[in-house]
Image (tube, rainbow over all chains, first blue to last red; front, side, top):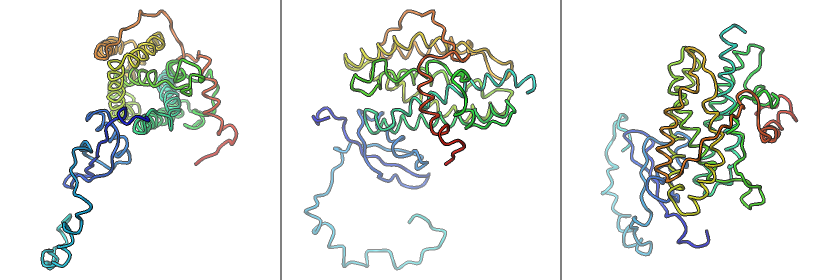
Length: 97
Length: 258
């Protein structure tokens, strides 16, 4: 396993815990291809009844924001509370907002 | 014991012990599989099989009617009382532990898993319709589990059989070793209405196995005349060692529970 070229590619795993909810990122694993990644994800991440659906994505396919740009990307939102819909009263029956 | 139980008990025990010993062998991989992901997969399969063994042994204890529970049947019987297939008690590698792999050969394990999961799937499909309600219920629940085992292990058989020259060679060697032991998959008698003679599974098992071997580019060995009889309590030299490990705790601390 010393040569990284001999290792299986990395996959990001997303699991939906029940119908109606979103798939959530829950971790990553190594697998030779997509079919194996789904099977491995089933055994690694859903063996305690966590899931009803699995998505897998090659980690290298994910494009991430640059941590160095964190300030310019996110901080301008800090002082603009009027963009948050926090001034509405939500009825109790409304879940998962 | 009434007349029916006289015939049903050995039938249930053969299946229960096969699941139990198969599970025990598989659990030897825990912490040692080639990759972490497969380590979890093999342990999950072993736990599924243990669950099936527990349900079947509990029922066997009821049929026997002398008050033995699943634990007493699993841990306090003698070697000759076990009715599992010889196939499942064989070690996880043909070579000695000095080969550096700790006596575990993934090719052999994965091939054995595939053969047994196809067989269990065919058997549970039929047992779902058993006139014995307990057996039918256990079969229906177990069927979902073994279908996944079959998918997972068949997948590996194809990947490795049709993989590199080395993986192909190791799969072919594992097939040569296990092939004669597959004969016992079709050896047990049936009980009318309760469960089929295993012979009835043979045509479909052989057809599915041949298709898998073809997909995996593996060549079937010549048929063997060997007739293992683990189902009658005639075992290989390996079962005693396996039981020594498996029974140790219950023998050393009788009645110990979680």
